Image (cartoon, rainbow, N blue to C red; front, side, top):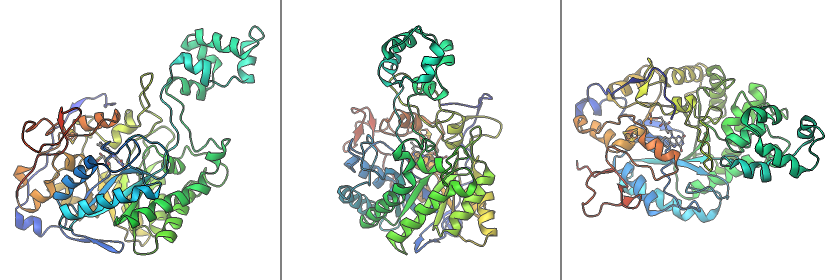
Length: 483
Ligand SMILES: Cc1cc2nc3c(=O)[nH]c(=O)nc-3n(C[C@H](O)[C@H](O)[C@H](O)COP(=O)(O)O)c2cc1C
Ligand code: SF4
């Protein structure tokens, strides 16, 4: 993963832990209304993909154990990992693109409800993404993937006449020569792997996204409802389709790009279609970016506009993330796919303990506060989830008191210690295992390997009933904690 050149090392600094009495009287552990439901406390575990589904996208025992472990800590809400809304092969990512996925998701809901003794609400994050290929072997690229165009012929002159000759010649050229002959897009396909964009309106299926996505999201949300989920979080963040519609780099000229109004149009149409199909009373929220953190990408000003539009559209909650784009991702190795959290924007999404002067904690707090104030100023009370490096009671409480957010999201800290909210509530903060923000977990995610935390995945390996992953090398879930 990319790290700021300053390379300043940070340790977690949680501040003072509360006594049980202070915690019980705090804002963090006060309830909050989210649409039609009440969260018992303002603690929230944002979506994290642990790569534990089957290759066909079904819930497995490992998925159930993963969420069961979080639910035992009884947070206010858990958002289930990004779950694909299409019925297409997506590797071991959960899917909700067909009714056959409902029984597994039902089991997931009942697992969370029973482990949390009914205290935790469960939402599922619904995602759409476009096609992305692995970085090709150059020989294959020139011989099979590259489409030979008039432009290539013109540039090469009459020396090469057949496609075969052109392919064979291109294959022998060095990067500098290729820079002059291939388009920017062809070079990217060669060096990073082909990646579709919402701007590729020459392809029918990309042109038709505004026609198909509202129904795909709505059908997925209906399945979530049928599975007993408390609600749905529409994934409008990071490197995926809906975030690409919101992006300042969306230049579509069909009314779904260009201006702010054009860029937000499809996300709003999805919201209204989902709401119409799931009916009132089912919680509907979204996660989107405060800033894309890439050259030419959307700014905080854009996000303020989107936030107000989403609140106006009647969303029940809004969760704010940051960065996480393909545009500045590291070049993958041949045969591997680019990963949107390897560049500077990826750093903004999941900042690690090696940082700059600002540090890894709370980089998204001010932007979230700005979005929230604009939403309040426009007259909407939509609860806002603030996330990013939060790992202490004092900071969480401050954010709730000073209007930075209404709900506290903690992803990696909750993975490091799924009981951490509970320990705080019981006045046992001293027993919390603190995330070091090493991003070992994110490194596993990058390789699509089963995600675990380095603070506990080698602990108690020989003990009975410890479930293992990675050919028995790592434990699958955090060790037990008894109250
Ligand atoms: C392993 C891993 C997987 C993640 N998967 C998702 C995801 O599926 N959807 C999402 O919106 N964010 C995802 N994130 C980002 C987190 O939800 C969160 O925004 C980010 O880690 C910053 O919060 P934190 O500092 O509390 O960890 C993931 C993070 C990690 C570490
Ligand atoms: S591996 Fe554990 S300690 Fe390291 S960042 Fe992930 S959750 Fe935190």
